[in-house]
Image 1 (cartoon, rainbow, N blue to C red):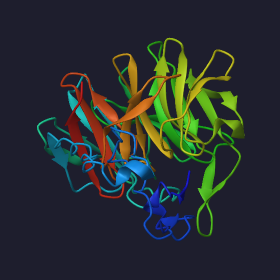
Image 2: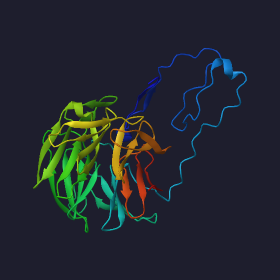
Image 3: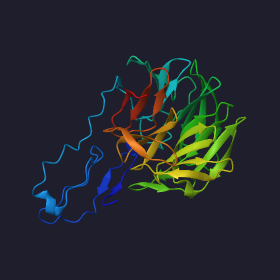
Image 4: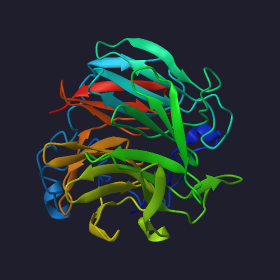
Length: 335
């Protein structure tokens, strides 16, 4: 990569975004710059000999991204959006502050598909015996809503929002995403990070856990996991996208990485299934990619600022994008 991008994903820590460009000062009359995310070359660049007589270059810009069919505002550091099929609503985790602060002010919002915030603080930390600090990933299993909260997975009744217990993950430092399996098992990622003086620092606790019978055990634990973030349960194993290494891979039955694939840019956050392909959000690319393990990933939604843990409305064919820094959620038709 000609430019090195140092991207801080969770700016809820009030840390600056630093971009360091390593390109040298260009010589006179440079060739056209490489395309950006919004540009895809359609024809080879002309040679120096042919450039003088070549016809004007075609417009290389991709079409603008589609307009969202719904936009939700007034949220506070939205990290994850989950489609609740039973309730036909969107549930959103709001960190409401710094991502590792145990301040008990996190909350979960309920949104309607027609664009309304029906309950901004449907589940609220510090109220009604709820403990919720900095909720991130969400999952639903057997009538229970699970929320990843720093080092604890908290459970709530899906209908009433009442607390239904918790599972502490010993040795974890940054629980991030959750995914539920049809058999009732719930998987949770630990991205293995902590807040440093100027940046996030590795804690070396990178892992993926499975919760079963109220207890958690690691199915994979190694810094080779690359700061695992988004999770998706499939019939061939758990698909993982990573914030650190920018990889998409599958964990097999023994917890080994297989089918390792890299989208164009990294700092990956959320992953959902769409047909036989995957949708993956990228902070570095400011985009949603679509592709398959072992294949290529292409931009399907560009100009997506701080896209965190995405969801998918299976009833309407919409990808749900939480914009972490903008405090908004947008829904786009994508089938």
